[in-house]
Image (cartoon, rainbow, N blue to C red):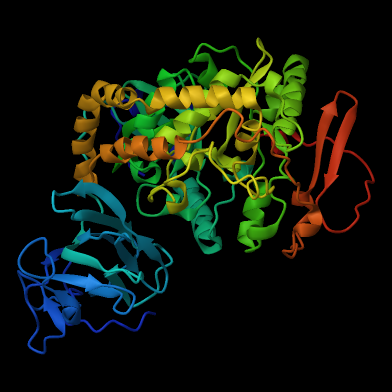
Length: 623
């Protein structure tokens, strides 16, 4: 490894010396398999001689399917578009042969519809990617879809297909398809220092093995053995560190921008000891950053989040998003006293996903309430006592029968829930993404806003709903991901507080002021991100359209809307999915209830026998 960071020579340590040491509708013509990079545009104007296919404008050798779907009903450019519906679902279908793992493709198409949304897909036998809205719409109603993907390491097919799709019976019109094979090494020009990480050859090989195993399994599982040593440089600062891959799903491990957790041995970076770096795409680019600013302005805890260029072993990986991990610096930077930060365990969720049985198992019930930095907490009797109090509060918070309102910072929870509605950051509100802080001064639990978005549009079923509008006949199903949040709204006083905050945020001036305050940064960062992600723009309309959508859902809600609701709790007998052989460690839950008592819950379908109690090792206690 060639280490050339200008400061390395003057900062050699003993550690440094060790470190150095099968879809059937395809019938396309010639494909660009012999072209390293290409960009091709196709409207619906030019037909092949047989009238069945479309030719690209610049080069008629590039052929797209869809000639039979041409329509003069409407068009974005020229005379024709493609009219797709359930009887003729696919159009602008294009085949690329000779693709290899690591290749990067972008595509865009415009669609117009009075009902269903258009879809733009990139797929092969090994993967399936769906485009996201680009946030562009013209006065005639044409909306742009943008797709950007890497061919995954598991790719073993002969070809890639990119196509427009509408499976709905109502017609959607498509026009102006553009497909490009682009340089995967495009890097943004960004002012300011970069992060330089150096990892030795052996540890890089170890990370690669972990990555390959995760991609084969479809899920990344990490342990204490997943960490490797690294050197961390930022400007003139050099620190020893440990790094590992992070992210549950393997989209975090594709391409060059692989997500990493970084833990500094001493000192901090931007006030953080532990943090993650990941592709900006994984959190919907600037959506996550903007939402964090809103939560922070309302004094709702959230992780520090921003952007920084990253080099790994002198290779420029481009711009990354960084995000703070859950340590005391997070709350202290927001004027809170150090206290336990907690979550629900996810081991049972990912174990079940790994074996394909997650849909009907008691994942929430069997989740343990766990603190971050457990080993340090257990060495401090005061912190352990705080954790036991916080654990009891959260146990009751997630119980349908009990609502510990006196032990929650109700103002913060009401703001958190209402801001989730305004920002539509519902990914962060699902049970396994929720994070909690116990304030030892107030003896109350606060929420932490985090992981609000994914690199795909917000789920369709959430678009016209609020956390505060739900069907009480079905919502208290214990499998529901936001069960704890909506459980609070049964209390009339809390519902009133939530609606009060929601009404304040529904004032269009609230969002307008935030957009104006951050307009300069959003505009400049959009230009920077556009260098690496051609076609990206910050979709402020996404946030603006949330206001009238939420306002419609708000109508009719009163403080007493759910006051008479009596939840029916599902029993374990309702779970019918087969348990896997490795289930017992994940579905038999035990936690310390007090200094001298332990509670054990058995969610495994067979009786268990308790034969003893052992304390976990320090490694097993570390999160």
